Length: 409
Image (cartoon, rainbow, N blue to C red):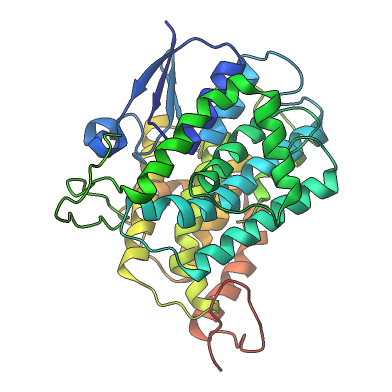
């Protein structure tokens, strides 16, 4: 039975996974869920992925979402060489870092600036442009510091698959990359040296480019987060179509492993750990931070939307715990994923957030505290600091922050 790949056109994370499958010569059955159809938002698809996001793979019954976790799993299970996802601990750490950087910063900001305004009722803003430029500057600096041909090493790695598809979105809107010469060189090299892989990505440049002047009609879609653009009188035809700590923790667990449980060697168990790390970075911590933490320090209100996103993230995590039936987030043993998720939920405890609607999350969190008091001892003072900041917001009026609005004294 071949691997089943749930994807959609012009989706950078899906394109990254498709490149990986092609590179590794892994046969797969493509299930193309047309984004405009909203099939991925259905309750039926939620049985496959509670986050209702793409891509997802089903490898003989082993279902996995989060594109970074999928890439890591595929590269480990179907190794073609020693370069795509290096075994060397430091090289692998750099690859993991670039994957986390793409997820937390690079793709996030590019998507907010270049892609989301094409699909939903968002405007390109000076802030979203500034964040995109900061992300580009970061990546250009990483390329300068490593001095490598590709994003992490001198060979193509799974990190390049993600970063290329993110950069592709900027090409689609004709974004000028001349201020970032090393990115330009890297991107051009990738296209020239990997024509079979670029052939997978190139049509999406044209599709997204077309959407710039021809936004799709998503008025029939009910999205839980993104505002849907109201349908206008037809004028044109619409087409049918935190931080990088997870990388650090993977490096430490790989290099200084105390046992075989903290970061399992078993491919499926490790894939689930990686999935939970990606879920925390892309969804769980991000939404908790926006709701619970940022309003303590910066000039943000707590909004109904931020609360809704936090509830969705908690519901997702509760569902994952239900499906695995494990004591901890990914397995029956504590893993590096629990370190991330516990610190995220600690932020909610600091504001006395009621977790009673998420009994499995409550149970997991209580178990973590009870079975690992020495680890909780590290977190508890931080929780108390946040609790104090909740009651008495710190004065940061002297700070000039490049992104967050500083509260006036």
